[in-house]
Amino acid sequence: MTQEEEILIMPGAWNLPFRHTAGRFASRFFRELRDNKKIFGVRCPECRRVLMPPRPLCERCFAAIDEWVEVGQQGTLEAFTICYVPFLGLPPPPIATVMVKLDGADGCLSHILSGVDLSDPDKAKDVVKIGMRVEVVWRDERKGEISDIEYFRPVG
Amino acid sequence: MARRVAIVGVGLTKCSSHRRDVTYPELVHEAVSAALTDANLKHKDIDAVVYGAMDPFDGVFAPERWNVDACVGAGALNKPFIKLTTGGTTGGSVALGGYYHVTSGLFDVVLVVASQRVGETLEAQLVLNTCIDPIYERWMGGGAIMVGANQAASHFHFYGTTEEDLAMVAVKNYANALNNPYAHLQRHLTMEDCLKMRMISWPLRLSDCCPSSDGACAIILACEKRARKITKTPAWVRGAGQITDNYYVGDRPWFQDWEALSILAHRVYSEAKIDNPLEELDVAELYNAFTIQEIIESEALGFCEPGKGTELLRKGVTSMDGKLPICPSGGTLCTNPIGATGLFRIAEAALQVMGKADKRQVTRKHCENGRTRR
Ligand SMILES: [Zn+2]
Image 1 (cartoon, rainbow over the protein chains, first blue to last red):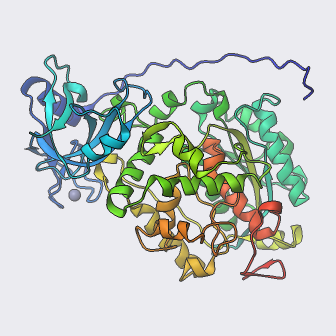
Image 2 (cartoon, protein in one colour):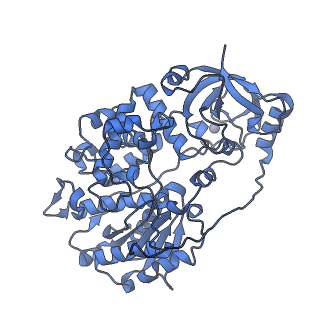
Image 3 (cartoon, rainbow over the protein chains, first blue to last red):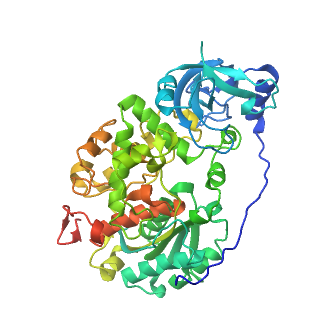
């Protein structure tokens, strides 16, 4: 390619709307969030793990599930990161994304942590820690989706 | 009965943030032509084509058109052609697809191609977001960077890894990429540079994250009979495999270890009769999209105990002059045409075994007279 050769750019875009059914299990989970401010997991009849979020099959046992179990609204932070650049769908940075194992559940819910000062990474990493206890903060107007839990905050 | 298979030709394109000089099929054709030339084969010698890309990054989903057009020079027209796509692992999946084609006895000489123009993706986050579970997990955006950042934060917590360790991985890979004319990022980087970089998602800074690259890669696989006629330096496939992991990321929050990779490594080592990878391997090309992944992968692959990856790094074991250099190419950290990246790793490893890696060539302790050990 010579420097004076002009290369043209053709624009393109995919704008493809979809509609995904949540199915019976996630629908019940979301209804409980929306209507009762309760968080439910499901118990596998074979390995006895409480799967969170709920799904109709245990991937380890291939067992069909029908036992619903309410889990706690407090839990333990198992993994996290603190985003300092904007990410799609997240509130403006800095924002901590966290994996919370709610009391009584065997899997983690992916969510966000608020109520702590994250502006300086050097200080934030001493505040947000794996193993810390966190609790649910509910949104006032709930729509039947994960963000009906507005965020998690440190306990106490 | 499975047949022995060798890589007999490799073709790479120069990667960059946008290869404006070539269209999509032309870019792919560049890699395909290079592989045919390397193997000294003509399009009539190719029995089948396995192709891969992660289409939303390219904005064109046309396996029957652009992808075939791209491989017409390799005789794809009117030949068996299959497309595989498995997200970021597409490059590895196409290589396996080609390997199965040949080892099964169905085809003797197979062209394996992967391409990606992340440089033409204006909003990579939107594409990465389509990879996430739409019911429970997609609402909070996310994508690859958060997985890498979670891995790093957990490794810091459980094993005491530091930002300096991550910076060392970046400095090593950037230095290696300077020896690789096909690499995207080609600039000198110091520890001080790294530690001053913008924080993206703690603890990953900009220099801990791979770029978005345009690039294509092709390899040619052949059965033993054909391979011996095609080249004096076949790179034999002595073990191959893939593995799934949990669907929900919340089901495996222990990001500090890569359990599935570890299980897979044991399977493949067993197939290849490798007992001690650190002693028996000459080089490793790993998918290090984030600095931390090189450390965690070196542990999962058994180069050291869990949590000791940083020790290997600090002692220089994984540097170019060390016992087991990791990513002489500069790795994914310096070049990431996403769906093609896995194939780049395999192609780079093959070039090393064939002795064709030029300035980035490592010493082949386990090859005799330039011929791969049986
Ligand atoms: Zn089970």
